[in-house]
Image 1 (tube, rainbow, N blue to C red):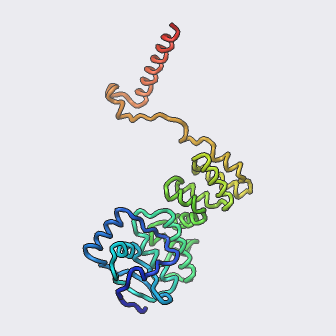
Image 2: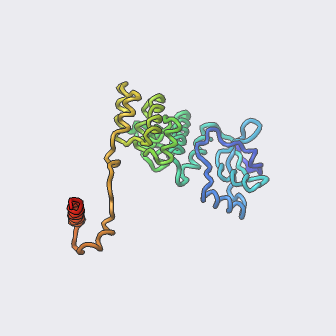
Image 3: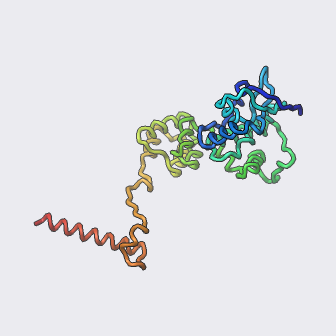
Length: 281
Protein backbone atom coordinates (compact mmCIF):
# COMPACT_ATOMS: atom_id res chain seq x y z
CA UNK A 1 0.00 0.00 0.00
CA UNK A 2 1.66 3.22 -1.17
CA UNK A 3 1.75 6.02 1.42
CA UNK A 4 3.78 9.12 2.28
CA UNK A 5 3.58 12.19 4.55
CA UNK A 6 3.15 15.55 2.88
CA UNK A 7 2.41 19.10 4.01
CA UNK A 8 -0.86 20.30 2.49
CA UNK A 9 -3.06 23.37 2.85
CA UNK A 10 -6.05 22.38 5.02
CA UNK A 11 -8.54 24.01 2.64
CA UNK A 12 -7.22 21.79 -0.16
CA UNK A 13 -8.40 18.66 1.66
CA UNK A 14 -11.92 17.70 0.59
CA UNK A 15 -14.09 16.35 3.47
CA UNK A 16 -15.01 12.69 3.11
CA UNK A 17 -18.12 12.13 1.01
CA UNK A 18 -21.10 11.42 3.27
CA UNK A 19 -19.06 12.05 6.44
CA UNK A 20 -21.64 11.36 9.19
CA UNK A 21 -19.82 12.95 12.11
CA UNK A 22 -20.49 16.58 12.96
CA UNK A 23 -17.83 19.09 13.95
CA UNK A 24 -19.31 20.77 17.01
CA UNK A 25 -18.07 24.08 18.34
CA UNK A 26 -17.90 22.85 21.94
CA UNK A 27 -15.41 22.69 24.82
CA UNK A 28 -13.65 19.67 23.32
CA UNK A 29 -13.14 21.55 20.05
CA UNK A 30 -11.82 24.57 21.97
CA UNK A 31 -9.29 22.33 23.74
CA UNK A 32 -8.14 20.82 20.44
CA UNK A 33 -7.77 24.26 18.87
CA UNK A 34 -5.73 25.57 21.80
CA UNK A 35 -3.53 22.47 21.72
CA UNK A 36 -2.83 22.97 18.02
CA UNK A 37 -2.19 26.67 18.64
CA UNK A 38 0.41 25.79 21.26
CA UNK A 39 2.06 22.69 19.80
CA UNK A 40 0.94 22.42 16.20
CA UNK A 41 -0.67 19.36 14.58
CA UNK A 42 1.24 16.52 16.25
CA UNK A 43 -0.58 13.63 14.54
CA UNK A 44 -0.83 13.73 10.74
CA UNK A 45 -4.26 13.77 9.14
CA UNK A 46 -5.11 10.84 6.87
CA UNK A 47 -6.16 11.41 3.25
CA UNK A 48 -6.22 9.57 -0.05
CA UNK A 49 -5.57 10.83 -3.59
CA UNK A 50 -8.82 11.53 -5.39
CA UNK A 51 -9.01 13.14 -8.80
CA UNK A 52 -6.72 16.14 -8.89
CA UNK A 53 -6.73 16.56 -5.12
CA UNK A 54 -7.08 14.71 -1.83
CA UNK A 55 -10.05 13.39 0.12
CA UNK A 56 -9.77 13.58 3.91
CA UNK A 57 -10.39 10.23 5.59
CA UNK A 58 -9.49 11.03 9.20
CA UNK A 59 -8.80 14.36 10.91
CA UNK A 60 -11.82 16.51 10.09
CA UNK A 61 -11.73 18.22 13.51
CA UNK A 62 -7.99 18.90 13.24
CA UNK A 63 -8.57 20.34 9.75
CA UNK A 64 -11.32 22.64 11.07
CA UNK A 65 -9.09 23.81 13.93
CA UNK A 66 -6.19 24.46 11.53
CA UNK A 67 -8.44 26.53 9.25
CA UNK A 68 -9.73 28.46 12.28
CA UNK A 69 -6.14 29.20 13.33
CA UNK A 70 -5.13 30.19 9.80
CA UNK A 71 -2.41 27.54 9.45
CA UNK A 72 -0.86 27.49 5.99
CA UNK A 73 -0.24 23.74 5.97
CA UNK A 74 -0.84 20.60 8.05
CA UNK A 75 0.97 17.25 7.96
CA UNK A 76 -1.02 14.64 6.04
CA UNK A 77 -0.43 10.93 5.64
CA UNK A 78 -1.46 10.29 2.05
CA UNK A 79 -2.42 6.67 1.42
CA UNK A 80 -3.89 4.96 -1.59
CA UNK A 81 -7.00 3.00 -0.60
CA UNK A 82 -10.26 1.75 -2.07
CA UNK A 83 -13.64 3.31 -1.32
CA UNK A 84 -14.52 0.50 1.10
CA UNK A 85 -11.18 0.69 2.90
CA UNK A 86 -11.57 4.46 3.21
CA UNK A 87 -15.10 4.17 4.65
CA UNK A 88 -14.01 1.62 7.27
CA UNK A 89 -11.01 3.70 8.33
CA UNK A 90 -13.11 6.88 8.45
CA UNK A 91 -15.77 5.26 10.64
CA UNK A 92 -13.33 3.45 12.94
CA UNK A 93 -11.30 6.61 13.56
CA UNK A 94 -14.40 8.44 14.82
CA UNK A 95 -16.55 5.82 16.59
CA UNK A 96 -14.50 5.99 19.79
CA UNK A 97 -15.30 9.68 20.27
CA UNK A 98 -17.41 10.57 23.30
CA UNK A 99 -20.92 12.00 23.12
CA UNK A 100 -21.74 10.79 19.61
CA UNK A 101 -25.26 11.61 18.50
CA UNK A 102 -27.62 8.74 17.62
CA UNK A 103 -27.72 9.92 14.00
CA UNK A 104 -23.93 9.91 13.80
CA UNK A 105 -23.75 6.31 15.01
CA UNK A 106 -26.64 5.31 12.77
CA UNK A 107 -25.12 6.51 9.50
CA UNK A 108 -21.59 5.47 10.51
CA UNK A 109 -22.71 1.91 11.25
CA UNK A 110 -24.67 1.79 7.98
CA UNK A 111 -21.70 3.03 5.94
CA UNK A 112 -19.39 0.48 7.55
CA UNK A 113 -21.92 -2.34 7.17
CA UNK A 114 -22.31 -1.59 3.46
CA UNK A 115 -18.52 -1.43 3.00
CA UNK A 116 -17.93 -4.75 4.77
CA UNK A 117 -20.68 -6.43 2.77
CA UNK A 118 -19.25 -5.01 -0.44
CA UNK A 119 -15.84 -6.42 0.42
CA UNK A 120 -17.48 -9.81 0.83
CA UNK A 121 -14.91 -11.15 3.23
CA UNK A 122 -14.04 -11.25 6.92
CA UNK A 123 -10.50 -10.28 7.77
CA UNK A 124 -8.28 -11.96 10.38
CA UNK A 125 -9.32 -11.06 13.90
CA UNK A 126 -12.88 -10.29 12.82
CA UNK A 127 -14.27 -13.84 12.99
CA UNK A 128 -17.65 -14.39 14.63
CA UNK A 129 -19.41 -17.59 15.77
CA UNK A 130 -20.72 -19.70 12.86
CA UNK A 131 -24.13 -19.76 14.53
CA UNK A 132 -24.40 -15.96 14.26
CA UNK A 133 -26.99 -15.14 11.59
CA UNK A 134 -25.76 -11.54 11.32
CA UNK A 135 -21.97 -11.89 10.95
CA UNK A 136 -21.29 -8.48 9.43
CA UNK A 137 -23.29 -6.58 12.05
CA UNK A 138 -21.65 -8.75 14.72
CA UNK A 139 -18.19 -7.73 13.47
CA UNK A 140 -19.12 -4.06 13.82
CA UNK A 141 -20.57 -4.72 17.27
CA UNK A 142 -17.43 -6.51 18.44
CA UNK A 143 -15.28 -3.59 17.37
CA UNK A 144 -17.64 -1.07 19.01
CA UNK A 145 -18.44 -3.03 22.21
CA UNK A 146 -22.08 -3.36 21.19
CA UNK A 147 -24.26 -6.32 20.21
CA UNK A 148 -25.25 -6.89 16.59
CA UNK A 149 -28.85 -6.15 17.63
CA UNK A 150 -27.83 -2.72 18.91
CA UNK A 151 -25.92 -2.06 15.70
CA UNK A 152 -28.98 -3.03 13.66
CA UNK A 153 -31.26 -0.87 15.80
CA UNK A 154 -29.01 2.15 15.23
CA UNK A 155 -29.01 1.48 11.49
CA UNK A 156 -32.83 1.43 11.56
CA UNK A 157 -32.72 5.11 12.53
CA UNK A 158 -31.46 5.97 9.04
CA UNK A 159 -35.01 5.23 7.85
CA UNK A 160 -36.39 8.18 9.82
CA UNK A 161 -37.12 11.44 8.04
CA UNK A 162 -34.66 14.14 9.08
CA UNK A 163 -36.98 16.17 11.36
CA UNK A 164 -37.77 13.04 13.41
CA UNK A 165 -34.10 12.03 13.51
CA UNK A 166 -33.25 15.55 14.70
CA UNK A 167 -35.72 15.04 17.57
CA UNK A 168 -33.85 11.85 18.51
CA UNK A 169 -30.55 13.75 18.55
CA UNK A 170 -32.15 16.47 20.68
CA UNK A 171 -33.48 13.90 23.16
CA UNK A 172 -37.11 14.74 22.43
CA UNK A 173 -37.75 11.21 21.15
CA UNK A 174 -36.07 8.34 23.01
CA UNK A 175 -33.98 5.74 21.19
CA UNK A 176 -36.34 2.75 21.56
CA UNK A 177 -39.50 4.55 20.35
CA UNK A 178 -37.46 6.00 17.48
CA UNK A 179 -36.45 2.50 16.33
CA UNK A 180 -40.14 1.45 16.20
CA UNK A 181 -41.12 4.63 14.35
CA UNK A 182 -38.48 3.90 11.70
CA UNK A 183 -40.80 1.17 10.34
CA UNK A 184 -43.45 3.76 9.42
CA UNK A 185 -43.61 4.89 5.80
CA UNK A 186 -42.26 8.33 4.94
CA UNK A 187 -45.83 9.54 4.44
CA UNK A 188 -46.89 8.24 7.87
CA UNK A 189 -43.83 9.87 9.44
CA UNK A 190 -44.88 13.16 7.84
CA UNK A 191 -48.37 12.82 9.37
CA UNK A 192 -46.75 12.02 12.73
CA UNK A 193 -44.64 15.18 12.49
CA UNK A 194 -47.77 17.24 11.89
CA UNK A 195 -49.43 15.75 14.97
CA UNK A 196 -46.31 16.32 17.09
CA UNK A 197 -46.30 19.95 15.97
CA UNK A 198 -49.98 20.41 16.80
CA UNK A 199 -49.87 18.79 20.23
CA UNK A 200 -46.24 19.41 21.26
CA UNK A 201 -46.11 15.74 22.32
CA UNK A 202 -43.92 12.82 21.23
CA UNK A 203 -44.74 9.08 21.20
CA UNK A 204 -43.93 6.81 24.12
CA UNK A 205 -42.48 3.35 23.44
CA UNK A 206 -45.88 1.64 23.73
CA UNK A 207 -47.44 4.19 21.36
CA UNK A 208 -44.61 3.77 18.86
CA UNK A 209 -44.97 -0.02 18.96
CA UNK A 210 -48.71 0.29 18.30
CA UNK A 211 -48.12 2.67 15.40
CA UNK A 212 -45.64 0.21 13.89
CA UNK A 213 -48.13 -2.68 14.16
CA UNK A 214 -50.95 -0.60 12.71
CA UNK A 215 -48.68 0.49 9.87
CA UNK A 216 -47.85 -3.13 9.07
CA UNK A 217 -51.59 -3.91 9.03
CA UNK A 218 -52.28 -0.98 6.71
CA UNK A 219 -54.43 0.76 9.32
CA UNK A 220 -52.25 3.71 10.34
CA UNK A 221 -54.16 6.68 8.95
CA UNK A 222 -53.51 10.33 9.91
CA UNK A 223 -56.56 10.18 12.21
CA UNK A 224 -55.25 7.06 13.96
CA UNK A 225 -51.79 8.60 14.37
CA UNK A 226 -53.34 11.65 16.02
CA UNK A 227 -55.58 9.53 18.25
CA UNK A 228 -52.69 7.38 19.47
CA UNK A 229 -50.38 10.33 20.04
CA UNK A 230 -52.92 12.32 22.06
CA UNK A 231 -53.73 9.50 24.48
CA UNK A 232 -52.80 10.41 28.02
CA UNK A 233 -49.55 8.74 29.01
CA UNK A 234 -49.07 7.51 32.60
CA UNK A 235 -46.11 9.85 33.06
CA UNK A 236 -48.14 12.83 31.82
CA UNK A 237 -50.77 12.60 34.55
CA UNK A 238 -50.47 15.60 36.82
CA UNK A 239 -48.38 14.82 39.86
CA UNK A 240 -46.91 16.69 42.79
CA UNK A 241 -43.58 15.33 43.99
CA UNK A 242 -41.84 16.33 47.21
CA UNK A 243 -38.55 14.73 48.18
CA UNK A 244 -38.76 12.64 51.36
CA UNK A 245 -35.60 14.33 52.68
CA UNK A 246 -37.34 17.71 52.54
CA UNK A 247 -40.17 16.44 54.79
CA UNK A 248 -38.29 14.42 57.42
CA UNK A 249 -37.56 17.38 59.71
CA UNK A 250 -41.32 17.78 60.26
CA UNK A 251 -41.89 14.19 61.41
CA UNK A 252 -40.55 11.79 64.05
CA UNK A 253 -37.32 10.08 62.98
CA UNK A 254 -38.92 6.65 62.64
CA UNK A 255 -41.69 7.72 60.25
CA UNK A 256 -41.83 5.90 56.91
CA UNK A 257 -42.71 7.63 53.62
CA UNK A 258 -46.19 6.06 53.81
CA UNK A 259 -46.75 7.38 57.34
CA UNK A 260 -45.69 10.85 56.27
CA UNK A 261 -48.06 10.74 53.31
CA UNK A 262 -50.99 9.77 55.56
CA UNK A 263 -50.14 12.54 58.02
CA UNK A 264 -49.93 15.17 55.27
CA UNK A 265 -53.25 14.10 53.77
CA UNK A 266 -54.86 14.21 57.23
CA UNK A 267 -53.59 17.75 57.81
CA UNK A 268 -54.84 18.87 54.40
CA UNK A 269 -58.24 17.31 55.09
CA UNK A 270 -58.48 19.14 58.43
CA UNK A 271 -57.50 22.41 56.77
CA UNK A 272 -60.09 21.90 54.03
CA UNK A 273 -62.85 21.27 56.60
CA UNK A 274 -61.82 24.32 58.65
CA UNK A 275 -62.00 26.54 55.57
CA UNK A 276 -65.36 25.04 54.60
CA UNK A 277 -66.78 25.73 58.10
CA UNK A 278 -65.49 29.31 57.91
CA UNK A 279 -67.29 29.89 54.59
CA UNK A 280 -70.58 28.60 56.02
CA UNK A 281 -70.44 31.16 58.83
